[in-house]
Image 1 (spheres, helix red, strand yellow):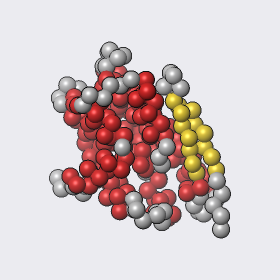
Image 2: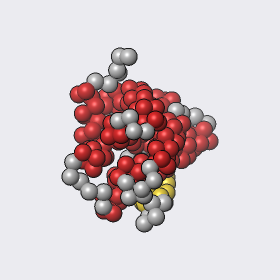
Image 3: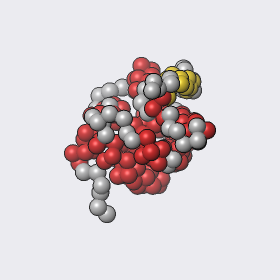
Image 4: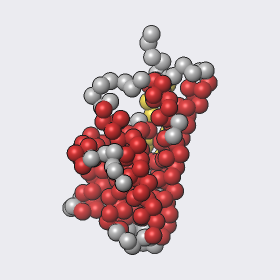
Length: 199
């Protein structure tokens, strides 16, 4: 199958999104998954928009799949889903990275599919986490972090879509900023902030 996203673009996504680099360092490098790193991963994902979070989680999950190899039967399904998401969203995300806001009609079209894609990632990550019995296992902890953030951003994307629909087609997606902070139990507290765009 021809990939829409080439290796250079994938490397750029790693650099711009940051979180995938950290996940890779935890799995393959010398970065320890301490409480501080837990918090930093949650915080980094919470500070981005749902489309950026979707890509960051997909790349992070891709690293998890590669580290598992064939140890878990669902890792192959998760890898396929990650690659689909990266091919579908990655090129457009990169093309708009330095070009200011995305056209709001295009943003609405894209947002319509983001909640279900985030949910799909979360379900696969949860299944892999459930199969790992050791609660201190690095793969299990990373799956849990990425799943929690995927579900949080799913709710945010749904919230934005509902607001757009409520405004009868007048997109307010760029008016939302969301701050999510994990507590010590890895629950995520959502604080949607509505900033009205000046005309």
